[in-house]
Length: 625
Ligand code: C2E
Ligand code: CA
Ligand code: CA
Image (cartoon, rainbow, N blue to C red):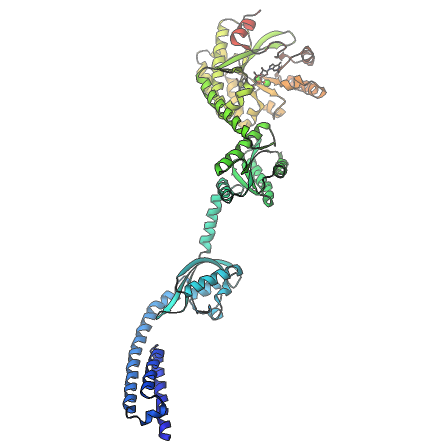
């Protein structure tokens, strides 16, 4: 029995040695299993060992086998160590953080970059669950990714983690399963800090979708957002806003003032954020999308926006005012596609602009008809100049106290092939907006200069013929050169040419002042038209070499104590400045008498004569009665 227990002791010793050796070879489980399986097959019980004649040969064979395996294992281990030495720097010096996670999600190893990323020491990280670094909302989805990796997939994703200071870091993660002998023993996480790239991308994205000045989303964003809403077929309305008077503000106070206005408008629009989304389309155009299609509700919000925008804006010592024209289109009532809804809101906005300050127009089909008409008008006007359909009428002017004829104002007419003679009210704004007014103005100057020369040569007596020029002529400096070219053969006629400019031409005073001075040098006289209705202050009159003020006909035609006082004041002021005064639109004897009594020298109006075609004017007023 004592012998038996000695033998079993030896057996246990063999087992132990083999275990240690096999452990050393990293394959102990397999080999131990084989050894004991073999032992149990040969010796079903320990007691049987002792009595068996095979015991000692088996023992010696086992020892040799173990030693052989140990030597092999040692070699293998050395090879592994050598390989590890090769790969170790990849792990230690890798700028990406690399962590090793066991199958339950606990971190078991990490490289130095991981310490830098998390701002924590290795020993504090080891043993933590990987979800420790994830914000709550990312945990569940990341756990699901973890499961996929445990199933053998390589998974890549972007996620936010926080470091020990609580700073959020954007990272790109690649999770790779650690597979040894077809078994997954854990997960590698290779983690790259992409916070900088992410911020840069966000900046680029922001710039692509926002207007830099106002930081509001831009037209591209509007198109995409509208596209998205339409794709989900969610009813909504689109408000297009355009600022009236903005160009004037820009011209008068400079671009910085214009920028300040746009920024303030953007700020006010942002306040509708709880009801809709505001966009800056570009220039002075904005848009708002509302999740609302009920007429009254939209109207209420839109009027609120219009009111808000019309509140005065303080810029340095100035108080600036802008008004918004608003056009509204609704989905699905007015449009089905992005292009359609943008176009229809835009159309409605143009219609509201034509109504004047701060109006609100809902899109309706007749607007489309109006636009078509307007388009046709533009086309026809473009052809009118080539087809010589424009004509000048002349309205005589008089010394009102004597009734003596002294000159005339040339007024444009369009001899339309179907509609007959059209007055400028119908088409002049289209000429202005399309810029055609410059070509037409040049034609007017050429025509009038030609007639001035002919009439002078014919010996007719008159002081001047006035032409109306659009502010657009003063935006470029070529006006004088043009007049000189037209007139190079008849220089003596220029002193009979009078140019009427409206006060709006003087808004950008620095630009226009030079043009006016050059015109004066050519001997041309300058009249300030529609005086009293616009912007010009008295200081403008001091700076500009004006020859004549034309009192706007609205003052003459709406006689009351206020307008009378104003007329009196203009006449006195002009007298002090040694400037002539012409009263326009005199229709009645009462108006004439009042003007004579106030000391006004010149006048024109239906009381004397309507504007006449050239031949008739020539017959009636130049050749004399
Ligand atoms: P305006 O320069 O103020 O011209 C005077 C306008 O008053 C003319 O209208 C004239 O027919 C009208 N008028 C004159 N006397 C009376 C009157 O007693 N009663 C009433 N009710 N009206 C009177 P018209 O010819 O229709 O011209 C309208 C405007 O079109 C002009 O106003 C001027 O601003 C513009 N316009 C006319 N011709 C030209 C042109 O050749 N070039 C440019 N840029 N504008 C022009
Ligand atoms: Ca005029
Ligand atoms: Ca006028």
